[in-house]
Picture: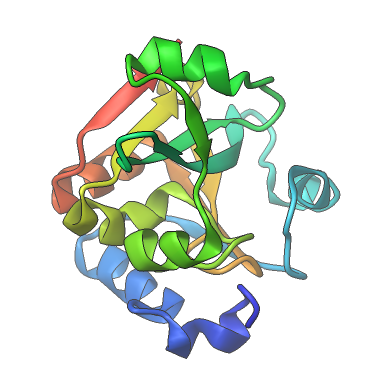
Length: 176
């Protein structure tokens, strides 16, 4: 099954329901629809159409990871940042990390591969997923994220993104 909005009704929380919740909380965003984006390279091919002159925009790559104690992590980084899982595990103080399976991704974040996003923490907080984000997000005006599906992107102001985390009671760990 794919990660596009065509299949959103098979998710624990649909993309439409997430967007309605963002609206209900008074959080603002710009919604973009596009072909399904599965990789950073796919995203780089369309991201120029989302950019607004004068805005500092952060485009992301997201990693769903597990440690040897079977704890789950969502790590969100600036898309061009190189990542060394061994060094990341040491920085987080959790030892070695590996990628979580598609089944665990669905179980813990309620999404499918290709749609991994900080917005999935709306499901992840209930499943004790720990969230870490690139400190570069603290400087960006706008952050681009998938709203649980990979054929949509929301461009959300940093303040609204942080208000989202407050609403869902998600603690953000910052990576430098």
